[in-house]
Length: 511
Picture 1 (cartoon, rainbow, N blue to C red):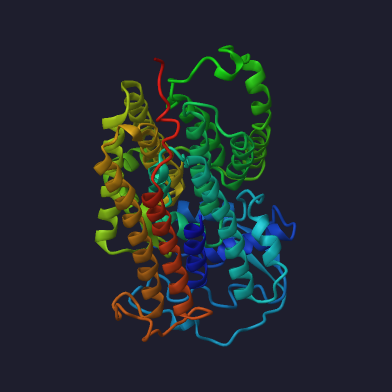
Picture 2: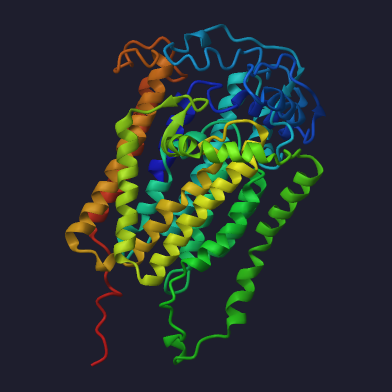
């Protein structure tokens, strides 16, 4: 948990301001929502430019339908701060940010995400509105967002952890929380909260499907996390409705029907489930609030069969881009990592999925196949029938809540049957997965920082040659990143020293 929190802090401070996806538009939306301007005033782009490609007119129309104008307090105009500058020019550093700070007067500004649900936007926005400079507001909003994401990842780790299995029980969470998840969780916007929330929610329902009763805290956690996910983005309710289906498909049916402490007589199902269902009310309310907003405010694209057909034809190209974006393509989906980082990550995921198939029962294997096929089908459906209908590219971050299902479900099935793993294989998994995860996270932060300090063609060791430096200096954020990686590895080494808790596995049987 500390490792994720420190890595998130490194992302917050080291990523150049304005270089999160759509960060200036999210800045305006968050300040607007945080000051009570939930709907804003309809507006249009002053100088739209989307080229002459097919669909450019439709893209302009769609973005204008989503645009709203918000009042910004004095000093909080991201346009006056020229954020971001030299966007998509990865060969250049961001030394264009080295300009004297300004204090613009109160103004009105347009956000092309103005019609999105304001509920979660308002949380960092309320803190941002109490600052007095653009950079102060931006880093405050990033810190609040990262704090929420850190809590969600902590919930996921706590839910997945099993003292009998040790660190093997969290391998799925480690591979689900990719550098892209942490990057999106450290910039302005609700995409990172949606993804981390879905990751935590899915982990909770998988935990509830294990043999034996789930900890009492997992039920209120599921209700509150579900509400946050539902309120975060238009697709949030889909993940909340998907969660119980995931839990049902992958539930471990080796459960005992009796309670030994009660003489073999179990409690009635109603008495066990009544109070648990009550905790699902917040999630249901969150789903209802988002659906009401979607109907009343959010525009929706019309379905065009030709666009859907073209989307199916482009699916292989899009899928290759998503596989990289799910691990980490930073900036405005324009800054990749070195190729070996993607190969390491997906190799670890594939090995985990293979172990799940090898260890799982026939029913578990069938459930895993159902999850993988269902997630792929849902991703394709959202792509060609909904997202692509706006004529904009379908970025991997929109479908990342589905992608996290792959390592999460595989990791859960391995954790449930970890006692069947040979000792050597178990130790290899316990060491290799965290090593891969830590390595790729640090490579991601280094590649991201290099682009802003010296450009992607600049020196690989850029700390002594930086043309742009974040507040606090590169050394501070590099130290936080290193400390985060050390925490991830330290937890694993501690597990190797103490070993798993086998008390329940070593109890003598009858006779």
